[in-house]
Length: 124
Image 1 (cartoon, rainbow, N blue to C red):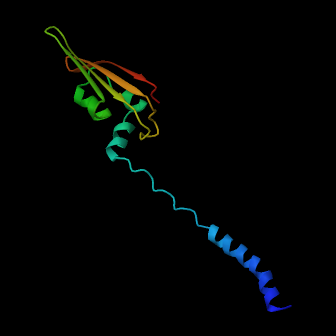
Image 2 (cartoon, one colour):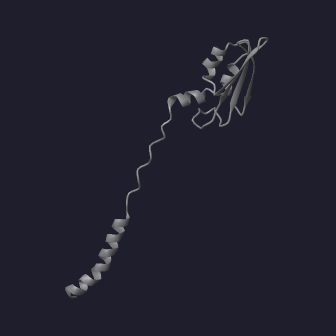
């Protein structure tokens, strides 16, 4: 076999190996986990059924806030004969704890600064 025919036979093999090596790239590194503000985790993870059960008629507003954190919505009605307040907590994202559920709400109604009633929707 002459050197020319040997080169002609090895050339296709060399090209195949070269192309295969060029196309083989390592996979990209995995993305780091999305950073979530600790306050968001704390706020949302407080919206649990266990915490809802801790709220009792007659509690002061600051006691309820200590359990559930700051509310997402506040509605006040102050008339000469009546003073009422409605506080609502909402789970609007998926950063909550294992007991929170997207769309869950807790609403607490106050009369004269004390819990008069409460309700929960979609709460685990």
